[in-house]
Image (cartoon, rainbow, N blue to C red; front, side, top):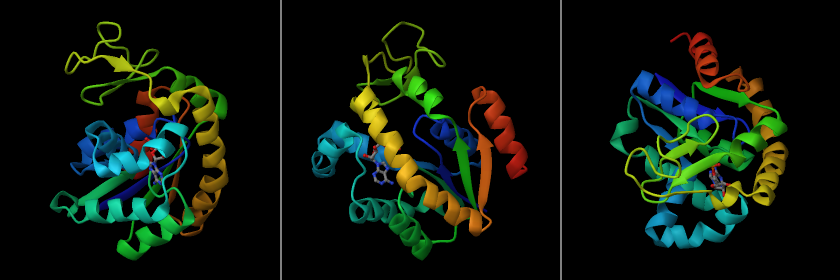
Length: 210
Ligand code: AMP
């Protein structure tokens, strides 16, 4: 069974690889960032609570994030495994996850700051359905129009340069201890996130032997 956490800086492509893995292994990819963004789009209580921090690229507090993950992992589609994308993002989250379940792999999709800055700046997202695109690597058929639902595309508020810098700085501060933790537990799988999406995917498949 695969119970995977995806680690690596924002923009490293870990979300894309999480989706590939989900399809290949037939288990859900769960993105805490997406759960928060969907809540914001719906204007729910959770969405209103997280909006300011999300917009500024600041992490949501551990207690709330842990609760969201706990509830999500109780859903029946996770019985054969799951992939967590964007969680855990702090040592308290690591410890909380450990109290819930034993993960099998921590995949570290790494990339230089320079590359992730460029990738994030070219990201676009659909206002209507939340689909992701990238003007450099995954452009839409018609400029600024979602391929899936024809919705209008926008630049995520936390993809603006100041927020990106904040997110990368936070990543280094809290991400390094998390990598160290999983490395010591012999669960860490290092992946170079800099080549093309396909090359990265091949390395993931090789290293996981799938
Ligand atoms: P992401 O889509 O993973 O880049 O996450 C976008 C934003 O969602 C982050 O900048 C945080 O504000 C919030 N977020 C997502 N996952 C977490 C987490 N595990 N802990 C705290 N905040 C999170």
